[in-house]
Each structure stands twice: as structure tokens, then as C-alpha cells.
Length: 304
Image 1: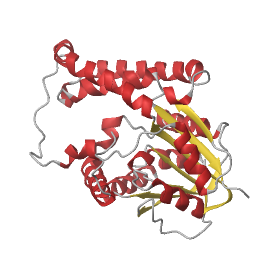
Image 2: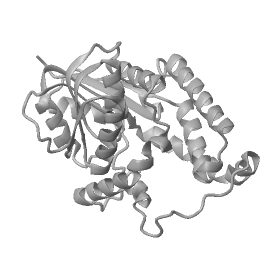
Image 3: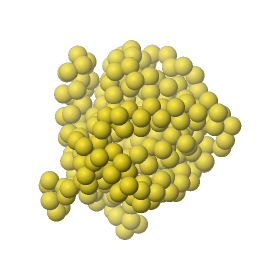
């Protein structure tokens, strides 16, 4: 990260569409996405962190880059949004989201759309939100202008899980350690090395390193909000110890055949990650500058 300076907006969008279409079927498993009490608790906590207070229910909500539905579907189950419109550039992701919504007995409208050109009327939504999506969008100024346009006066914008520039550099260390330690770790857990992609050369999963455009400094996000017309921004850092641990675990697991990674390891990895996440939230995030953390969360309100 970020993508090559020579990448055009059209090339970036094409890479994002093909990568996320290819990743849709296995995306939830790869990232440990949950639609039960664990996932709902995570989403409630992230939104509360972005807003700076426990969230009250919103009526009409628009998610940008909804993916497979982690945020929208969990917020629907919690009753924190009344009606969900989920957008994404990837038809494959939205197909997975729609199927998941049916399985959960939920209603969510899925619309293929670019963030810079939202196909909705002015002042249509009470909440515009997203998770880990802003860093994929080539023209952020235009996108933030669209977010403002479709929000009702008094409506709220909230985004979570956006990589900070400093945090992105920090993440490189556990990734390198994971690659070096992988052979020893595989022997210890009894897993063999992952084989080549079943799709062979040209697999669209290889686009993973082409789809990220930005890593942010907090002031850049504040300026985007100000330029679009939003009121005072709230911005906070999220995850430091948990992020380092998560990248180490994901790097190790990516080197092994998934079916051979034992459940005991997976349970340890998840529980230790959640413990470190609580340490971050309770001790570090309230005391350290946001730019030190791996992720940034932000919110602002459209003036009434």
C-alpha cells in the first residue's frame, strides 16, 4: 500500500472489482467475520467508538463498500438501522451479502455503485457509513461530496477500519516475522505448506496488493470532511497490539493448508486477539495519538 502512482482510477476500480468478486465466496472465512453475538458486539463497539457515544437507532442507512455485509447485517440484527441500502463496486460481494441476508431473515437492498457516483437522491439517508473502504476509493474528495449530498441535514457519516499511514508501516514487521517463522509454526501445529492457487496463474486473488490506494494521516481525513461541508469531525485510533497480533496470525495461517490448521490454534488466536483488542480499547486508545494506531475511525454530522 498504496497502489502504484501510475495506476489510473479506472485501473484501480477494475482491480477492486475483480479482486473482490474473486474473494467473495471465502471472504468471511478469511477474516473471521461473524453474524452472531460476537460480530454484533464488534460492530456496535466500532460504531460507538466512531460516534463517541453509544449509538441510537438510525432510520435510513447507506453503507459504502458493504462487502459481504459484516456491518450492515449486524447493525440490522441489532436494530441500530431501520432500513439498509448496501452498495459495493463488486457484484460478487453483493450477491454474497444478499444470500447471507436471506439466510438471516433480513431485508437489505444491494446496489452496485461507485462511491464517487451514488445513484440516490439528495438528502435520502440518516447515516452514511462504511468499514475498511475509504482506502480503496480513488477520488475521495468527490466521494465525500457524494456522502454529504445524500445525507439529510443532521445526518451522520461514520467510517471505521481505515489504515493509518504510520500503522500501515508498523504492520510490515509482524508480516515479515510471520513469513520467517512459518515453517517452524507449521511443524508445531502439524500443518503442511499451502499449495498453489487452484485457479492457477492469473488468479484474481493476486490483485490483493493492487486494490489499496491510500493510507491516511488524521489531518487528511479531517480536511476531506471539512471540504465536503461537514461539521466538526471526531477521529480516533483503533488497534495497536491487536493489529500486530492479527497480522502475525494471518500471515502464519496463509502459509498453511486451511483444513490442516487445528481448531485449538484457531481458538487461541481468536481469544488472544480479543484480549489484546480490549487492552487497546481500555488502556492505549484513550491515551495515545490516533496516528500511532493501525486503524482510524471517524465521524461527523451534516449541519441541520
